[in-house]
Length: 194
Image (cartoon, rainbow, N blue to C red; front, side, top):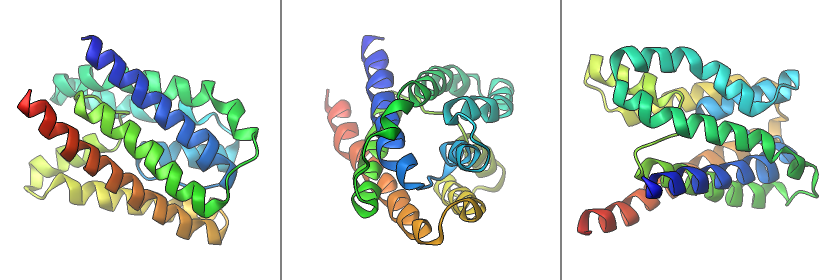
């Protein structure tokens, strides 16, 4: 239980710093539910963490009905990470790193946070639930659906960010995926050995 709490807190801090110091000041965009929260911020000035929670409510209602384990494991990660994203918002006013550096380091921070949370079988919530449900219905790998959803969110967000930023956002999403996969491979094997 303590290990899970540490993973949720640590992962959420990495995500909150990544979003607020590297992503928001450079108007970068992520995929998934975090990406939708960022679109809410850029287009309407909404708080991204609160937007993530509000957009996740229908998804968690579906999870509660179809997969209670996912609901219970994910709800903590969703609430803590969303709260910290909004709590850490003042660091988005600090002098930002250059956009290319931000896309790389921001991707590493967010990917590390997501990886830490996934290792403890929790998440920031969101669109991966839709991917899992579609995967069950169609027998297509959930990773393909996650990639497709992320691409759709990036394309949707294209109208709300500068055109040059779109390329860096794509780089960042790739770095997030690579970092998350690497953490799960490295530390997932260690956990299996223990």
